[in-house]
Every structure is written in structure tokens, then in C-alpha cells.
Length: 369
Ligand SMILES: NC(=O)c1ccc[n+]([C@@H]2O[C@H](COP(=O)([O-])OP(=O)(O)OC[C@H]3O[C@@H](n4cnc5c(N)ncnc54)[C@H](O)[C@@H]3O)[C@@H](O)[C@H]2O)c1
Image 1 (cartoon, protein in one colour):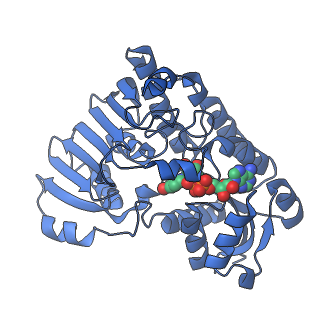
Image 2 (tube, helix red, strand yellow):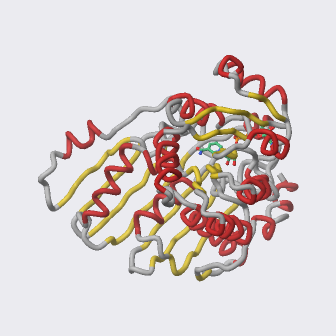
């Protein structure tokens, strides 16, 4: 089968996960080029993975790269505020895409990308790779088999630490223009999982957000939200980057009439509770078999995500995590921001909302500290 000509745009912190996945798919992908406006970052990734030996070319302008290289599949791992423009440029030129999360920072931009992908019959995948954790795949099977009975409620906790260094390394982080705060950046994976597992259709959100401990960023470092689902279930979200002294846990609980599950570990990589009325599966064996211990919170999900995208391109079908899935996670985070800013419940669906709507929200309290 012909290999897809692949390029990576953005060679920063998450890029090794992309490159490692691509290197394992050498039967399917021809690694043609990398692109970054920062030569030092590009040099780093090329050196760490010996990309020059593979003949991977370097570009500092993605437009020039697309003009010269006939790329068929690209991954976008630039600051979040850059996703929309780069993705639209690629989709307009017939390039299938993997876009890092969040898909964009505004619903109008996400809608634009979804429409472009549909019109041009292109795969648009958003990198919510935790959906491919062994633990999450197993839990999703239980949801789809009906083992939980009616879903009653679920909770998503992200109790992590991000220090000043993390923000100094890349000043786009924590800004409303390029990122958002703990919920949009760090917690969106678990917010995606909670929404997906509890039935996707959300009717209302009530939330608080605040910046308590990171006066040098614009956006929130704590978010607390209650979510009402159309099927009658409730969700609760607690996300923070304030935990002393390091990442503690990312945990997802699901409570149904006939099932209780807890996925835990640093990033929902292990199953800690597995209790079902139908006890035909040995709970201890499930916990042993479906737990992983990745070296960092980004996990092992990029490789199966890439495999799915390659198959989606070949089979001309949507990827498992498509633009609409990315939009649902974005919409829920923006609804939380809106509810917290307005001090009232917010109904979904949201038509338009953007991180820019919340610019200045914590400036006064940050100045006082
Ligand atoms: N899926 C995950 O688990 C995960 C984890 C971390 C980050 N992310 C996402 O990945 C994206 C990148 O995050 P990061 O932490 O790697 O950021 P980073 O700042 O470490 O890296 C971003 C890179 O993009 C480059 N860049 C900026 N504008 C560019 C442009 N126009 N063209 C080409 N390159 C450009 C920068 O020079 C930098 O090297 C963000 O959207 C973030 O939310 C996802």
C-alpha cells in the first residue's frame, strides 16, 4: 500500500509523542518534513530522533513546505491559538490533519474547520489521545455494551501541578489569545472523556473558575463545574494546576445503575474500581490487564490515534476522534468559562464563544497579589 506523505508542524513539548508514533508506522507513513518557526526546537527534535538520517526536510514556513512537498497528512502541534489558521490553510489544500487539542480556541473557528474537512472529504482528527488508553478503551466497551445500565453521574478530576518554569518556557501558555487556563489546556482530555462516556448531549452547565496561585498567567488555574446531560445524568468537573508539589492524579469516576468504575493514575491510565452487577469478568484481572504506567501524563495514546487516522484516510471514513468530537470538548470548556464569568447557569448548545471573550477576567485579582 502506498505510504502517506507526512509532515509535522510544531516541534515543542508534545512533538516527541508525534515523532515516536510516526517512526513506528514507517510501513504507512513517509516522514517528509518538519516545520517550526524556532530553529532550535526543530534542531532538537531532529537530533533526538535522528530525522536527518531519514531524509526529513526542515522548514520554517508551513506554507512553503506545503507548496514544495505535496504533503497528504500533517500534524499541527503549535500553540493552540495558531491551530485554526494553520489547519484551515492545510484543509484548503487537500491535506488530512491531526490537530493537537484543543481543536481551536473559538467555536466559529472549529465550525469552519469541520465544514472545510467535510467539503473536501478530508480526515480531521483532534488529539484527545487518552481515548486510546487501554483503561479507557475497556471502560468505553462497558458503556457501549450497556453494562452500566442507566448512567447516573460521573466525575472528572485533574489535580496537577504547573510551575512558573512551565509558563516561562513558552509564554503563549496561560494567555487568552493562545491557550486558556487549566481547563482548556490540561483538563480538556478528561472533560472530553466525561462528556463522551456520559452521553455527549449536555443541556446546562454551572461553574466557578478562578486564578488563585498563578498571578503571572491570564487565565484560570482552578475550575469547578456541574454539568447536566440530556439523558438525566450529571457530571462534575474539578480541574486545577495548583496541586503541591507535583501532579497527583487524573481520575474519572462513572456511576451507573448497575456499574461503578474508577479510572485513575496520573492520567486515567489504570482501572482502580471495576464493579458490575454482571460479574462475569474477574475485576482483579481487568485491573491488572488494562493498566499502564506511561513515563509522563501524555501516555501512549498517540500511536493508536495515528493508526486510526491512517486507516480512516484509506477507508475514507471519519477518524475515531473527529472535528465534531474536538468541538464538543471545546464547547464544554467554553460553557464553563461563560457560566463562571456570568455567575449563572449556561444552556447548551453554544453557538459562538471564544477564549477572547474572557480577556481581562483575572487581571485585577492578579495585580493585587
Ligand atoms: N495531547 C496532549 O496530551 C498534549 C500535551 C501537551 C500539549 N498539547 C497541545 O499541543 C500544542 C503544543 O503544545 P506544546 O506544549 O508542545 O507547545 P510548545 O510551545 O512546547 O511547542 C510549540 C511549537 O510550535 C512552534 N510554532 C509556533 N508557531 C508556529 C508556526 N506558525 N509554525 C510552525 N511552528 C510554530 C513553536 O516554535 C514551538 O516549537 C498545544 O495546542 C497544546 O495544547 C497536547
